[in-house]
Amino acid sequence: MASFWFAVIIAAASNVLATSGDMGPASFMWPPDRVWSAQMDNTAPCGSVDSVVNRTEFPLTGGKVSLTAQDDSYSAHLSISFKNDPQTQSDFNFILNTIPITEIDPGHTCFRVADPPSDIAPGTNATIQLKYTADFDRPGNQTFYACADITYVRPESFTTEIPCFNVTDDKDVPAPTSTGVPTNLPGHGDNGPPLTTPGATPKPVSGGVVLSKGAIAGIVVGTVIGLALVAGLALLFYRERQKKNRLERQRDSARGVKWVEDPTKDTASAGSFGLQRMPSPSRAQ
Image (cartoon, rainbow, N blue to C red; front, side):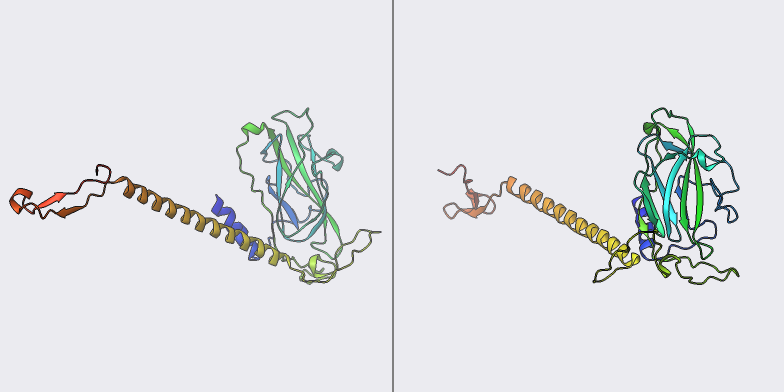
């Protein structure tokens, strides 16, 4: 399992996260969301032609959601409806992200979400909604929607390993023109000026070196690899040291006896070789 996540991180840091025609600028990675529809992705509340099809078990406490994005997305909101089949935006009246999500970068991002109200019991069906802004398929900003259907279960009954990690990619999906030909239009992701909030004061840009997202991800992965190598060498040194200590203890515990020739006795009386055992130091007078 660890090697799987390591491979995912390496792929992301190498900027090989491919774009997909089966999702909008962002979507749920876990829990799985409803099928994406290009014709409906700007339609509240769920941006899909599907209604509830499959539900995913979700812990009552300590829940997390994992998002995947192929283009910069902004002002994201995670909310939930406790109805079996929510139909309007007003059905999603419980906020899950306690900290504002100002931006979702291309790649994978994990968020811890708020626990449901205390009156929500195990077995309760619910729908998590992702609502955000992007300029994915036309030059202007739009609001996008995605939904994931869940069923709450007790934490002790929840055995799924949530794919929760944070890795970003520095690739943006160019916004297509009305003819469908992709071009780098102004204001689209990192290819143009950043989106600003009306009335906000721009922050001054300080001097220094600015690293791209890909460079930062590469540094992080390099650090992880370096720490893993150091830990491996330390373990190898420790085992070699333990082996050496064990051999020294075995050597010291054995009685090394030295035999020398006794010139005072002839060969016949001393045995075949005329040898005599010297007394051990512990018995010497």
